[in-house]
Amino acid sequence: MSLSAFLLVSLVLFSAGLVAIMSRRNLVTILVGIELMLNAASINFMAFNYYTAVDPVVGQIIVLVIIGLAAAEVAIFLSILMVLYRARHDVDVEEIREIRG
Amino acid sequence: MIATLVIAAFMILAMAGAIYAALVPHTLHCIIGLGLTLFGVAGIYLYLGSPFVAAMQILIYIGGISVAMVFALMLSVSLAKKMKHSEIKVILSSIAAILFLAVMARLIMTTEFPLREEPAGAAAWGVEQIGHGFLTTYSPLFIGLAICLSVAIIAAVLVARREADKS
Image (cartoon, rainbow over all chains, first blue to last red):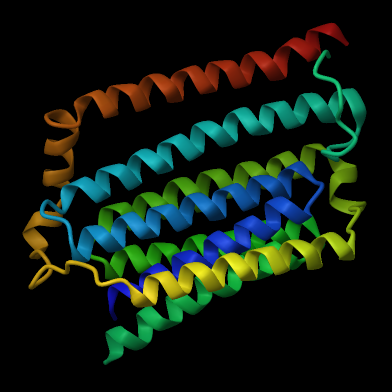
């Protein structure tokens, strides 16, 4: 397996995330798209780490940080989703126009 | 040979899950597709020499994030049923994504990367090295991540609770 194969896999994941974010109106599926894009970035880091980096620790640490940040992001995102659902009984992003609760 | 076949299978699993998650109309199926992708990505990490990151991927992403999303879906019941899905938006965004994919794939295929002669040995990939890195050179990153996580969890609890008190 060469470096390009991993980069292409990550590119497909990123494009799928792009489609999910652009075409969906549901907050949960948009979150799925964001996770796909984060995973694409992580694969890139790990692949470059394996094939080119001088110190193989760097890429692993960055991927672990990305995983941690994704967990934090999901916690915030889901709590916002719960509030929105309680207030409006809907999580359609095109219907959510006001910020004031 | 067998390693190549296995990694190819994981890659195909990751890509198929991602495309399924992007296109399937039902929200729960979308999360299942995400789970498949995350599993495939964990296999890719394993091939790329890092069992620790692969384990973290499975524990945190599949065990934590996907399950949290399914719980959110269960708490907001009507979400699982109704789902407006406009074909025209899917087609337009697919065209945009395929254009992006074509341009980037060409870029990847034509670039010469400065490859290392041989990949680093297994000794450089251990948990010990990661822990050492986190506690010495990259300690600001580690502390920042810890603060970010605790602030995010406190904020999530506060945001979800305030509305409950009001109603």
